[in-house]
Picture: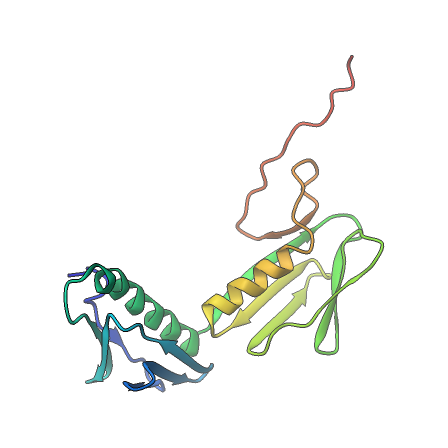
Length: 182
């Protein structure tokens, strides 16, 4: 048995979950939004007694590999609809900043042009501290991570001066520049 997969996922207050066996979708609805979790064919899902239980019908290699994964995806969706997910980024560099323009954002990152970015639906982006701090929030963990990664890709930090957009918890390994001696 999978150590992670056999642990039931408790339904928090104000969260509803329903599993449709025909479409293999677990629909989860909470205060922060609605999410659908696609359940693979190798596992079964039951919603009863205020918890979601993931089981597997046999001990095939496919169902063994999907057991813990499915339970973790369901637990992440439960966390997302109750408290939400967040990734924080920071901008380093002279003249580098981000600004909100309506529903989209404008990044000035040292290029000859500005970068316009409209976040996907279900994602909120907040800019603070003089345009140097970025917070990406949402209910879907995968979408929050992909959006934060997309924002970071606009200007990946360079190893010499560490200019660019980085995650707050990220450490940039600095390189030594030219010594100037011949």
